[in-house]
Structure formats: structure tokens, C-alpha cells
Length: 186
Image (cartoon, rainbow, N blue to C red; front, side, top):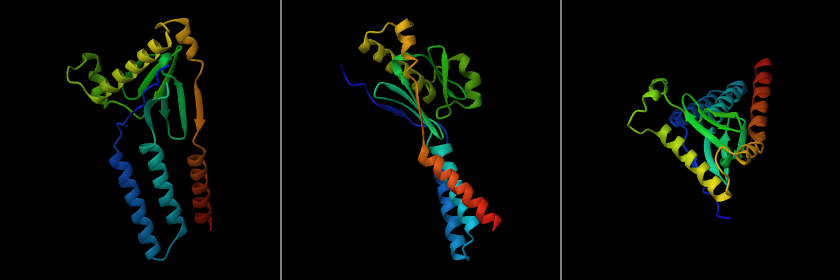
């Protein structure tokens, strides 16, 4: 069987804000350490940078190893791309498989773009590209597996959804929240 392609789609959120959050956090830490070093300020700046990463930079959508992969803030969902029936991008990325909807905030349209979506603007944009590519990967995966679209076989694939938790990011967030509370209380 042929190897399934890997394709990742950049988030439509502003990665500039994520990078700016890191720079601001680093600047706050440096200024605080130069000015005396209050651990509460350091903990708050580190927590701010971590939350910026998990909220802005970590979420993304991709196709990898025959799966549609949705990275969320603190978890990752994987479902067989061949099970995907529909894909729409409005305010969020939405894929349906087996009658269930899977949502990711990584790829979205602006409010104005979501409202105009009904017109099917002839000018192609990134959200249209993502919709088309994921649907292409789904059709290709079904063809490779010999599974007809809208069949019981396709719906059965939708039962193979896996969620894994991003334990390092959860643990880091917990540690920084506890550190912030302890340093503020002391």
C-alpha cells in the first residue's frame, strides 16, 4: 500500500502575536531580574509565554500517516482521513466523520469572510485551500483503501478516533500556576 502524504496547514491566527508574547515575557523577566527579581513576576511572565504558545502557536491542522490530525491547546485528536465526509472552514475548521463533528480553532475565516462564504467568492483564499486539500486527502485515502464514499465502511472508520493529551504542556501550566499562587501568597 502506498504511503499517505503528510501535509500541515499553517494556523490562520497571528503567529506574530505569539512571538510578540515571548518577546514581552522575556523582556519582563530580564527587567525584573535586573531590578531585584520578584519571583511572582517571573512566574507570571513564564505562564503568560506558555499560554501564548499553547493558545496561538500550538493549534494546527494536518494530514499525517493517513490521519487527519488536530492539535488543540492541550490535546491532539487523530482520525482516519478516509473517514472524513465534509470539511468547512468558517470561524473554526470543522470536519465531519461518522456523523460526528471535529473542530479546531487553528484554521478559520474572519467574521466577514465567514458571512460572505455563502457567495463562494471567486477569489481563492487560504481557508478554501485547506478545505480542498483535506477533502482531496480524504478521497485519495478512500481510493487507496478501496472504500466507497458515503459507505458503511467509511462510517466504520470514524470509530477509530484517538485523543492524546499534551501532558508536558499540562504539567508545565500546572506547575507555573502553583508557582504563581505560592509566590503571590508569600
